[in-house]
Structure formats: C-alpha cells, structure tokens
Length: 433
Image (cartoon, rainbow, N blue to C red; front, side):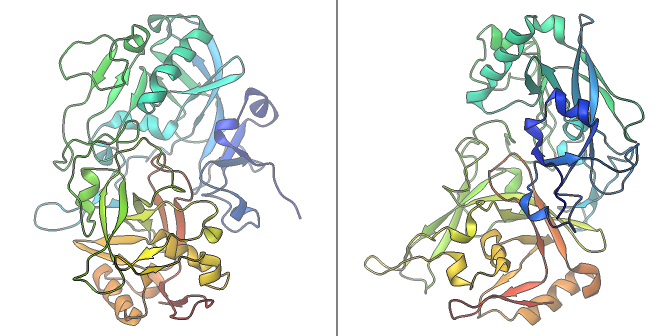
C-alpha cells in the first residue's frame, strides 16, 4: 500500500523544501486516505498535485524568502492563506436581541486584522534551526528570543521589521506579509503583544509579562480593546491566571475568562451516584498535559452543510484507548476501580467520543453527544435538529477542532450522531441520529 512521506511541521528543514517546495497538512485534507489515522494536526506531507495549489480544503505550506531590516536574506516557509480569510463563518456567542451571528477570524481575535499572521505562521531557518515568531510560555519566551538573536548575531533593530514573500506560482492566496516582532494574538481577546525581543535581551520584563499599556516600553506594542467584553484573558502563551470561579457547568462565555478548564471530581453525599464534577480554570503552563489532567478546550464545530458553531471538547491523550481510568470515589469508604476504554467498550474506536465529551452550543443551550443509558438519545436528536433548524442530513457528521496550542493530545474529531452508552461492559456504543 502506498504511504506518503509524513513529518511533523515543526521538523521541516531547508532540505525538505529543496525536494518539494509545497507541503500540505494531512489532518484536514487526506480524510479518506488509509494513512489518515496515523496523522494528527501537525502532520504534513509533500504535495504531489497540480501547481499552484488551489484546493478549497486544506492549506499549503510553501517555501518563502525572508528579508531582514538590514537587508540580509534567509530561507523559510509560510502558509498560503485564502484571499477571503476573514469572511465571517464561525457562529458563536450572541449579539443584541439574543440572535446568533457569524464571526470572522479577526473578530475572534478582538477585531485585529493583523491576526492574519497567525494563519500564515511564517517560519525562518537560521543554520540548522527553524524559528517561528509566536511568543511562548514564560519559561520559553526568553530562551527562544535569545537563541534567535545569538544564531543571527544581530540586534533587534537589524532584524525587525522582516518582510517575507512566499515563492510565486506555488499556491494561490496571500503569501506575503511583514513581521514586526514576536507576536501573540489570543483567542477571544484584543489584548495582543508584538515584541521585538529587546526587552528580553536586556533582561527587562524577562518574566514574559505584558507591558502596561501606553508605557512606551522599547519594542513592545499591546492591544487594549476588549472583544465581547471578556475579563482578562491570557490566551496561548502564558500561565493562565485563576481569573474565574469554579463551575458546575461550562458555558460559551466561560471561555472568554479562561481558555482552558480542568475537570475535578467532587464527592457530595447529598447527590446520587455517579459523583459530581466541577470545572475550574487551568492555571498551569501551556500547552497543558492531557495525559496528566482532564483539560477542556474551546472548539469550532463544522456541520455537514458547512455551517459552524462554537463549543468545547476534552483534549484526549494519544494512548486513550489503553489508559486506565482513575478510581471513582462515590463515598468516603466506597471506591470503584477504573478500567480502560478498550475494555469498557469492547475495543470500539467509537469510544473516543466518551473521552472527548464534545459539547456544541446553539444559542444558550449546549448539546452533548455522549448519552448515558438514562438519556433519551432520540429526544436529544430532535431537540438538536429543532435548535439548529436543520434536517438530519444537513447536520451529521459534525467535525470539531479545538484551539491548537492549548493542550497536548488529540484535539479534533468527527461526531457521527448521538452516542448511546450501554450498561454492560464490553459493548460498543450505539449511534443514534
């Protein structure tokens, strides 16, 4: 069986683009290919189709040239972004009058058109290393910046702004832009950062915190406006503060105050089995470790007819099928030992939905697709179709993708219907739609 060469995007090197000037993401393109299950969101392969790449699905990663402020030129690559990249398409939240509306990419990033560069994700090669320009967690920021300038043997003023241009004729769309510095454009917030790195080289603000607005700090620009009136939100590149109280149920608005939530078990003798869970903001570093914690991320859900809605899902460890569930304490003295999903559901791969527990929002109502035996899945189907105002053949399958960079593991999937759990261990879930 033919299997293409596959690599992680972060492992691409100059030699790879010499062999093949265009690479594509496997996970959003080869959905009908036998190697698809081997891939994740970071897997890429050489493009062997017609040039220029002009497919409606998927994205092209093409070789590019980077011209620094001092005129020196380096090789690298970038993503080709469709010309209509900012067309409203994501249904999320509410506007006045309690009506839903579609949001564009820039609206999801505080109305900032400069967030285009997140989609382009330019990467520059220096010697045998590759550098993107996205700011990392506190522990990585300073080292990332210092390594970059040490290899270049240049000052920030010699480097920024950088003009990059993708090689003409390789892909349609937007393939050039200007990089003003290392950047961060958090989701659901207009609080962005563009930093030339000078503050890190001088050991000022070396803890990676954002500069206060209007301070005039060297090399730092910060966005100030708010989107949908969220509270302070850190986004992907920092330790998330404990900025929100615990929740019994998560709503769409909760992801404006914290981009990652953690599920914890609560034993409450006043409530019946199974034990209750609560949710609290994740305050660790990003990306969170999905093998160590039950982490819940914001997600975009794409219906069969192409319409999109917001929601959330759990980041699932790669070895989820054979990960033994922790013991469930139903009282101070009564504990039920956990089993693996493979044992519980007879080896059915459909059980990954039990791990993801995706939830899609339609207005104020959240729809969960994993149903316990006590839940009438037929009734849930009709309720979903009524809320969406769509026929069943317009809804399923639903594909969802969580915001990348927030947690390790599997953060996307395909929902075939409502999954009906069986009481007896060893039986696969039933699908109702």
